[in-house]
Image 1: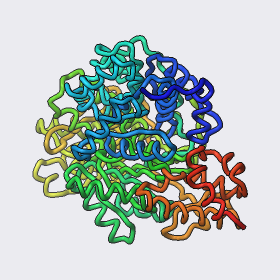
Image 2: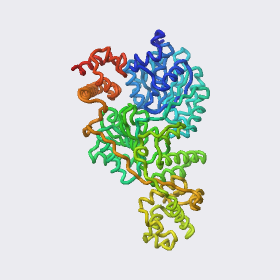
Image 3: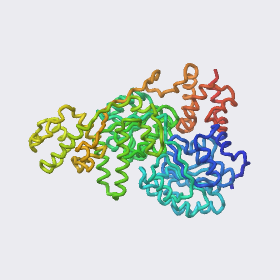
Image 4: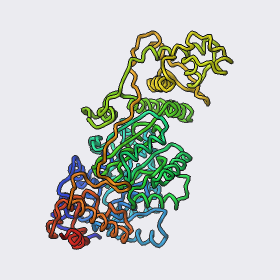
Amino acid sequence: MPPVSDDSSRSPLAILQEVFGYTAFRGQQQAIVDHVTAGHDALVLMPTGGGKSLCYQVPAIARHRAGKGVTIVVSPLIALMHDQVGALEEVGVHAAFLNSTLSLEDTQRIEREMMAGRMVMLYAAPERVTNLRFQAQLASLHERGLLSLFAIDEAHCVSQWGHDFREDYLQLSMLHERFPDVPRLALTATADDHTRADMIERLQLQDARVFISSFDRPNIRYTLVEKDNPRQQLLRFIRDEHDGDAGIVYCQSRRKVEETADWLNQQGLTALPYHAGLDAKVRQRHQDRFLREDGIVMVATVAFGMGIDKPDVRFVAHLDLPKNIEGYYQETGRAGRDGGDADAWLTYGLADVVNQRRMIDESPAADDFKRIQRGKLDALLALAEAHDCRRVRLLSYFGEESQPCGNCDNCLRPPATWDGTDAARKLLSCIYRFWQHGQQRFGAGHLIDVLRGKETDKVQQYGHQSLSTFGVGADLSENQWRAVLRQLIALGHVVAEGEYNTLALTESARAVLKGEVQLTLREAAEAPRRSKAGKGAGKPAAPADLTGDALARFADLRAWRAEVAREHNLPAYIVFNDATLADMARVAPQTLGELGQISGVGVKKLQAYGEQILRVLKP
């Protein structure tokens, strides 16, 4: 039986200050923590970097100190388990994980600790939590009053409508059925209305209080550009704005991941590939390097990233269009978790739009599922083609009203727009003439050749030089016509079908052809470059407000932290994050008491590292 501590040490605010070194909760954290600590169920939607972990870690500590035993944290992510447990042990909280990386001896040792009730938190994957042996262990804990709380992380995985459905999550409803008096806290960073409703139903959270935090991440700049030699665009973006920074580049296919990583290395960057087809040991080695080293660019499929707590990721780039806004938001949210400036950069083109629509249409899913996925893709395309504030559109998707941010590409440099109604009618008419002429459909390349009046072999083969639309678009370039076509597909007036992506009109095209709809289209524009004056190549950026002696102290503290991290085999940010080191460098405390006032310095870390830090800071 765990020892029961006095009331003052069980106060959530006291735990926040003593254990984690923070003086106050942020946003809705206080309300969530109080609600869960009191033994009530909750569903929490909070953006990545918003402090979700504290929403279950503080109640777990408070309830354990009250003698209520162990909190079970359900997570699908081995990387998150390792990092969270390492961070908790650093601040003096007894935690462990059970997963496939452990030996039988280690597994049995951890199970004994859990069954004795001495452990505060145990992280486990859903398939372990729901297996019969583990369920029997939970039942034994429950009988002895030592099963404190279930925290279900990444809870959107339970929903078929979500962007990361995992079948193992469906069985988690058994937790409520078998242990109805044990509170449950489900957490996710991303969920639209369909996914929220699914989580509530499938996890039986109908009586749970729902907490929805703002989805705004004001420190992230959103930039979406039209594809034009995407590798070079990516390289220019990294070199101009993020030289020496840690970042993630997402690609759709494994092959593209490896080719892109190889190419970036050839250009002098340090890039590592990550996808599910790599050997598990290689994936782990690459992930460890990304977490522990500065300036690594991880090129990955979406198999990488969920549960990665690295706070100083300065950019997330997409070389392919994601499937929906939830996936895009979740992936971009891995940047700037420390609150510092970060970029979400995406390049997309006509082929991305066509491929995403085709994948939905050709999937074996039910019609209802396809319909909802098309709607999600349409919302993402509307974001990509928007003339107005990206952030307003993004937040609106999650039901949140906002004002123009002044920080996205459209706000910083409003895109040029033009009345594309006439051009759209010419393009749609040409597709119609193809069908009228020979009841055949053609792809984008041939369509544009006909519009621009190019007498290619294919044009002559099908007699399309005789069409009334031949040459009517000679005033626009090939790239301009591709942009028009991309936007017409995004707006739903044209569809690309079949293996060869042949083009057909939709019902809504009729109104455009009749001139009943006016179309304002955007012209392509590159994002402005953000200056990083004073940053040396290959060196991570220091906080902009640090100068002179403070900047030197920050560099010394980072060097000290790197040594400690190596000794403890931990990512450096788990020892202290950059924001805490920057505060130390700024304030330059000279006593343990002064150091203990720095945000992020809890009692355990003060005891473990205080004297060392003071030596580093000594004038």
